[in-house]
Image (cartoon, rainbow, N blue to C red; front, side):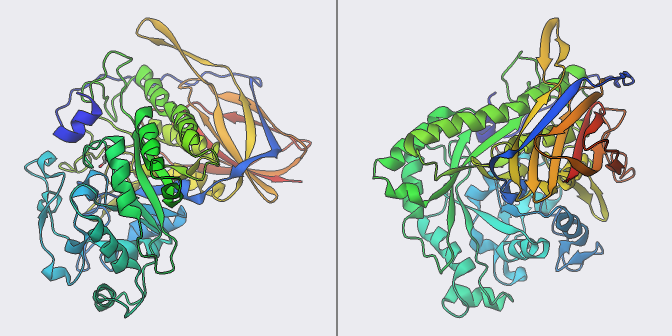
Length: 550
Ligand code: AHR
């Protein structure tokens, strides 16, 4: 079964894999790697929005994860889980996408406004995948969390809302009305009055609007040409209310170059002006196939979130690393239609996707437990985005809580930050910095891929300049080998360095409600000698170094 078929057909079953603990790290005594940072060679400004998030009305993401209700015994602010708000403030969350995902193209935003006790219950897009014991709110959407609550959540954490419009099952007119509900001035329209009656007099000024989701699949099963024509219709003459609207087109699935090319060719058939309404095109890439090339089947190719061997560790990273060639490939095709590259890439779904079985809360559809592997994966992916600041304007990790590559797990009054959450905290300092060219040289990792030799890079990362501070993040994917690197800053001397490292002797390590700090970052000052730095990056680690330059 291919992913596209899954998106039409729903979820299927699982199997198990044996795994082994990794052996003790090998000791090495001398410098074997080099990181050279060229602070004079800017790659562009890192958009804070590449550190964005994604929250879909799916399984335990909204109900239980984000929304506990005002009368809950779980500490909350206006019904929203307080702990989540606190954690998201810490990571400077810039933008959150909602309500889907596939859910978005069957959602009627009108169901989620007005007095909470008058809101209808509706069948959730994901209802057929829910297990019989799953909470009713996962199968039948109670609509207690809607536009008001979502925008309020964004305001509480200091993020911009990014709403995904329904193209498959609502009209363009309904999309305009949603924009009107959110953005028309106080007292100006009937919808503004309805918003005010709920306590939101001032407009929400929502700027990011997704026009459908995965329109090649669950979002309508369109051809790129059909979708481009829908996109033109949905985005023509939308009232602005003084707020620039940033429209995001539904983009390709992974390496579907044909989608990107077909979409832009069709857009241009009406001349160049429709191009100006596109802020970005949304690329989705999940890393799921750890079968070592044995199958392309969406179900059979997946591995377990917690039980994996060394080969699966590398296979997952290899799948994730594909992100860089996807960015380059789609960017190249976008340039055929848009040589000045006014349209940016928005990677609004990314992360690993494992088979079911590791849910901390049984019945939470698509929930998986992130391990150290997912932290390394996430660091690697964020570094890729940092290295392409001129191309990637926004990215949204899928998904925030109780789902795929989640930063947080929660159930009732239990909550924990996952290793992925820690990586977001460690990388937050990159936001808004000048990405600078950085060269990594380290021994290549060799591993046995079922009798065939395979290789993976030894060290990778990214660097950004913030006045006199340089932020360097580095991933060492090797399961056994530390890497001792000489860190050289071209044309500058290092004064002070503070380093934070996330690692664990067991590559399967993860946090749970009982052991919340099993995987936890360690921060300490690092010794600088004559303006230079030599640092050991432990095996299976993510590091963040803040260097103050002389
Ligand atoms: O993140 C889960 C699902 O993956 C989303 O709903 C969909 O857009 C994608 O296929």
